[in-house]
Length: 309
Image (tube, rainbow, N blue to C red; front, side, top):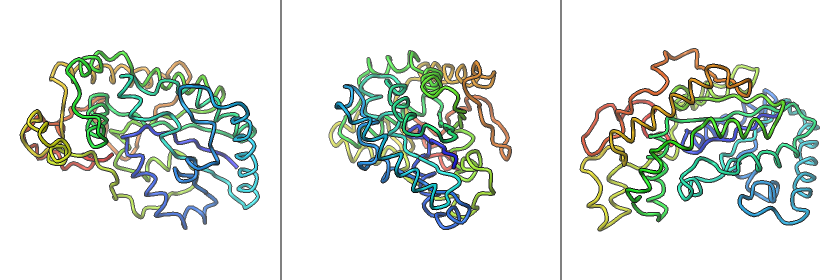
């Protein structure tokens, strides 16, 4: 039984991908493919492995490894040939990213603990990434709906400095799982095609049904105003997606993302493989984010990828 760890990231259509897997459960089972989604990974099965910050309690990691080992053996004994474990919380949380102003601090430690649980199984890692101005804008919008309020100008400037990029995340993941293949799927190519994502993970032909359902769309300006109440006066007019960064800040973040993509396209020092969707024409390493507005309605907001969370 081979194992694919699909570790996110958040805000890169991971919920849409998981919904696609769920809706095609019967077809995947017939192909010998099982899925462990967030309901499974966030239960007691993984308890002790994914905690951030302070080290897990004494013995918690060993107990979790034992539980997972027994479950894997049972899964394999049932005839499963391919197991997909999908949960972006494996890497960390969006709230922690916003608090620290960096992408997934401590991801290497969490991944290293998790790798021990799958020792002995052929293991691959799949990671989604997204152009940085769109990722942080979506994260900040989500933060508003979870009570974090509007970001301060200093916080936006810190994010725009681009000190934290996807390269550091990929390097941490690869170093935590030496020998495991790491595949990187850019949101701009794969975000609207869950079937294309799955095809990168399995050797059989994937289901073509339920491929255009969108889950957890990034909230747009009207919804953000409803959450903020009186603070909503600080938001721009319009009904599009909120872009909190200035033009210069957005350009800096897109340039940092382009550097990450170029590193990946150049082989990532042998640490990872950049996947390309053969059914799409590449628009460039960091296409213009015309759907992220500061109040003006942009008809391109309704593109296939726009709003996918």
